[in-house]
Length: 168
Length: 102
Image (cartoon, rainbow over the protein chains, first blue to last red):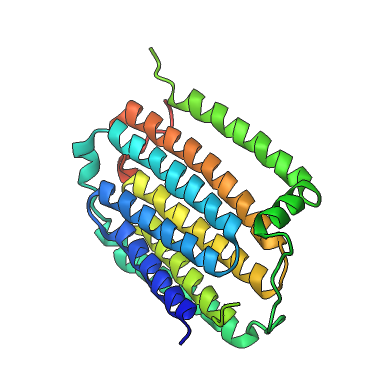
């Protein structure tokens, strides 16, 4: 087994394990920490899949920004209240069955159709590095979605400020 | 290039998505429900990256960057909603929220 393959399976199992711990741990603070671990493992997977720019954005935005927002909220709400986050016991069986059904459905579709090996020996995606290629694609082919995303971020920022404003 | 078949990556992202679904359905803390939604979006991102490598097409990476930006906006608004609900009704548990009116 090649070293990169071993690293891939290690990182992915760690990401899955910490994903389970996010929904399993009783303390919401532990969930946030496991969420960071899961995001970092996924960033490692992106590097292995030769998407270095997305990996950097994942570390910066997810592990750096979104989790900080979660931690702020955990500290803003009453910690003693937030710490005792139990599970809905009644729904556990039903939702477990639903999750298993989702897995079974997608595995069934995968086994029926399968993923054809489109490019078996895919050459490197880019000449001038991943960052340059992604930047070029963002500003040429995808410039309209890019601008729409920036407007959406502005709207989200205004909405978050309006919603979280203390009514004095 | 790494010799991991694309099917394995898809199975990993499928399991991550299922973990997110189960988290949304079972937990009653709204913060953890939002975290599970983030896990699901990460699973979708992993699919984008896997197909981007498999089909040798940059569009998947570009769209996963868009997904990350939209996830940032979504989590900001979602956490603001949770904070507003907490200020109004002193709870972050979804089964104790039964008033829509502020």
